[in-house]
Structures are given as C-alpha cells and as structure tokens.
Image 1 (cartoon, rainbow, N blue to C red):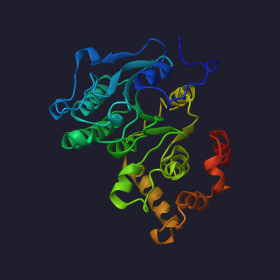
Image 2 (cartoon, helix red, strand yellow):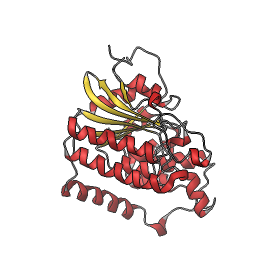
Image 3 (cartoon, rainbow, N blue to C red):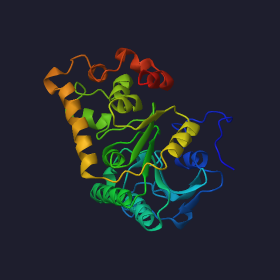
Image 4 (cartoon, rainbow, N blue to C red):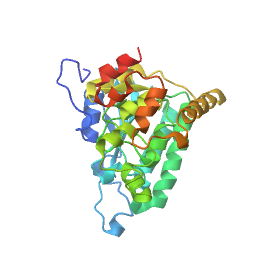
Length: 302
C-alpha cells in the first residue's frame, strides 16, 4: 500500500520530524533503517564537551520504496542541534552514498534540514561535508539520481546548502529555505544593517523556496505538504544528470546572467533586492510574489 494518498488530510513537511517525513513520503511499511538508534552510533565529541547526544546523531539512513521503486533515504533531524553535521552524522551520509554506488538504487533521496556544520566539532564536520559532496558526485557519475527535498523548519544552510546544489534535482516548498550562510550568521558577521535575521519577510525573499525557484536554484516548487513532496519525488526518479563540461558551462552561464542583472552597485537600498531581481528575470507582478501561493506563482511561468 502506498501512502500518502491525495484523499488524506494535508500533512505539513515543516511540522514533521525526520521520522515522520520518512513515514509520510515513502510506501507504507517499506522503510528499513541502517544504524538505528538502538545501535547508539553517537558523536564521540559531544559527550567530551558535556553536550547532550542523540543515539542516531541527528540523521536517519536506510532504504525504502517510492512508488514501488527501491530508493536509499537520508533524513536530517532539525530538532537535534539544528540538523548540524558532525563526524558521525557525515559518516552515515557518506556510507549511504557509497553503498548507493555499489547497489544502484533507483535514486537517493535526501530529506534535508540542516543549519550546516556543527560548531562543536567544526573541523570534523567540515571534512565530513567535503566527503559527502564528493560522494554525491560519485553517485551521480554512476547514473543514480540524487534528489534533495527541502521543506523543514530549519531550511538547508551552510555545507548542506552546497551539497544540495551538487544534486541532480532540488525540490522545495515555499516554506523551505536554501542558502550558503544562514541569516543569523550573516547578521553576526556583517551586522543587522546588512541582514536583519528577525525580518522574516526579508529572510524568505532572499532564501525561500519561491526565490530559489524563480532564480533557477530549485527545480520544482511544491506546497508545504508531504503528498506534494512525494508526487514531485516520483516525477524526478529518472532525473539522472551526471556532471559534465556542458552542464557546468550551463550553470556558469546562469550565474553570469544573474550577476549581469544585479550588479552590486545597482542594488536597491530598501531591502528589495529579490523583488528587483524577479522583475529583471521577467517575472510579472514581481512585487506580489511574496503574497502569492504556490499555484499562483507557478501560473506566472506557464
């Protein structure tokens, strides 16, 4: 039996834990976890620092069925240290990806929710993220699609934001957020005048799913609903697109065109950078984008 079905009530991705997201996204009863909490693979560093640990170190890995197709799964738990990547957390992700190279599932599906590298074990976390990036590219080279689904409360930032952009496909809800540096990090580094992390409208205009979809950093925008994420993941199961010179040149062309549209000396002074960019990208009624629902926004591009 597959779940969820369209007849079931809407289930918000942003309100689900990592295990709940797995439960609602994949075929009912099909998930098999590797290195479950009972095996207690925990960070060796947090205990030394007197910081509470989690038996699964904030990430769940395993295999499942999606529409009857075998996929490998990784789901980050934003409720534990913001989904931060440490040594064990990263090693579990790398192990999953290396196994995918050998066993060739239909796809690898990441349910990403992470603030980036865990500051408590920063060096180990940074190394882990670099290993995850390399493993993602190796899996893609093997012809196995890597899909990133972003819809959790914490978004996908830091090292995991980079990893997401290494994937074949990025699927986001309008509630999801994706960026290199989180709002609090930017504010701490450059001051509130540069970026006010308490300005929720600014944060979502700059890092949210709508902006990422309009600017080309996200392949599909969906409602904040687990059934919508499931349907989108099913549509992209065949999205294998190994990195090539042509794909890199297309990406560079996209970034160069965006920079031309928004040179640094032409940024507006009223915090409306995203709205200005949307307008220059040809989005009609760009000033209304923040108030549009997903269906209204998608209609602008069809």
